[in-house]
Image (cartoon, rainbow, N blue to C red):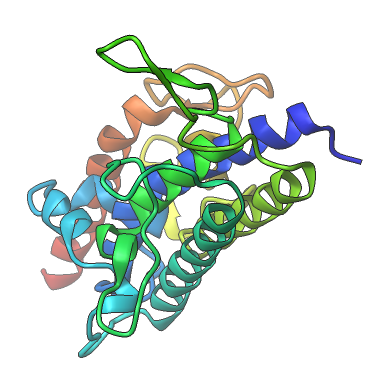
Length: 259
C-alpha cells in the first residue's frame, strides 16, 4: 500500500510532469501522428521554438472548439487530462477549501454561465491540486494588524490524498504515453547510424530525456561517449547533431538517386 508520504511525493511529481509536457501535448494535437522520421520524441529538435508559449496560453481544451485536430489521440489525452484535474480540484475544494471569496488562492467552481477557475487552464489546476497534496496554506495566518485568521485550506484527508495521487499518476501516464515518453526502447526505422550504418535505438522514460544508442558497439566511430553497455549513446545535448547527420545522409542519398 502506498504510504501518505509516497502519495504526496509521487502525486506532486506527476503533476509537475504533466505541466512540463503540456506545451508538447498541445503541439501534438496540431501535428499529424508521427511518421517514421522524425519520431515524436525528437521532432521538437527540428521545430522552431517560436509559438510554443502561445500554444500554452491558449484557452483550455474543454472550453474551446477543435475545428480540425491533426492528432485525435493527442486531443483525447488533453481533454482527459483537463477533465480529470478540473474534477479533482472541484472535489478537493469542496472538502478542504476555507479561503474567502476574494482570496486568489481559492478554487472557483464553475456555473452554468461561468467556467470559474477552469478558465485558467490545466497549469493552474495542476498547481492548485499540488498545493493541496502538499498541505500548503493549512496554518492560521497573521494579518497586518496582528490578528489571526483561519487557514485558507484544511489538511487533505487521507482518502482524498490517495485519490489525488491516483488521478495525478493516471493523467501523467496518459500524457506520457501519447507523447511516446513512457518507458520504452524503439528502433528508429529507415535511419542507420551515419558513422557505421548500425541500427539506432531510441530510449525514452518519464523522468529522463530521450537517448539514442547505436547497436554496433565499441567499433562505431560516432563522436559521442559509450553508455554502460558499450554502445555509442547520444544524450540530450548531442541529439541535434545526430538529427543533422541523419538528414545529411538522407539528402546525399536522394542526390545520388537523382543523378
